[in-house]
Image (tube, rainbow, N blue to C red; front, side, top):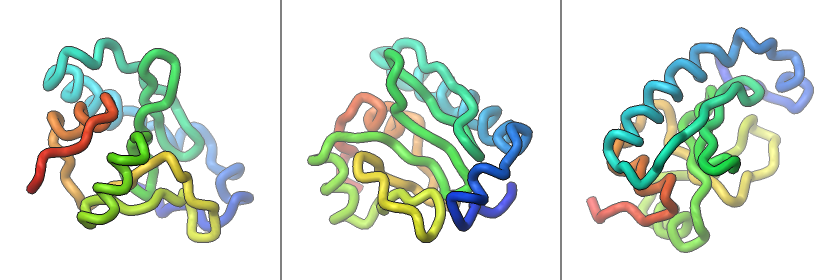
Length: 128
């Protein structure tokens, strides 16, 4: 996989073929998530800048990019994950603003399908 872009200008230089491996992987992950929890229903995956995003009921719920796997979660869930050290703030490149509604799991972290499904549904994860 390519390194993450470092500036907003770099984001615009990525052609759509860069996103393909992320889209392929996110489609695979989304299938696992929906199999783990049928409450998710249908997740649609599309290209998203240099990565891919998963949508539920027309809204982004997750993204997979060079910086890792991110989930859009409620404030309480986000704060719990930050305090526990299980997730970090999402920035698409070093000088970018923090995407406040999201939590980020780095590429080396393994998020189980059942945990991912809980996050997509906006629920907290069980204690480790």
